[in-house]
Length: 113
Image (cartoon, rainbow, N blue to C red; front, top):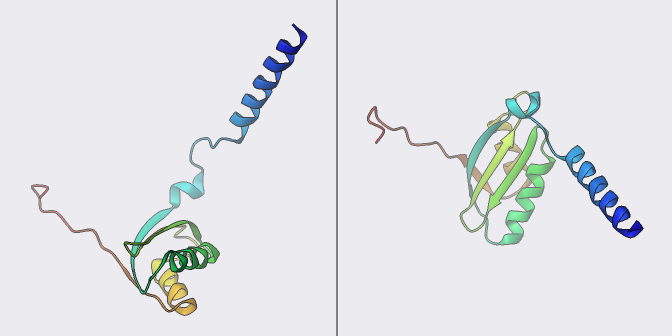
């Protein structure tokens, strides 16, 4: 009986710790975040993608990034109060041999086509 109580207590404690570490509602910084999708030329392997990920991670103002290889796409979440897409591109092109351009969404007409 004592071991059951200890086990239940431990499970309850772990549950409380898990809830205290989970993210709540978005904070002010998260609400200000923007996303830019970049076409990257010059990625030739997964190692290149990993290198680009590290360069982006070190860039001031970049909150998250995901580099797709194959596909040669980098999706970057950034804080516009600390950096801009132009600065992100300059950091990539200044620290690597890759060439980068912003991918723009195609505009649809009024009928949604």
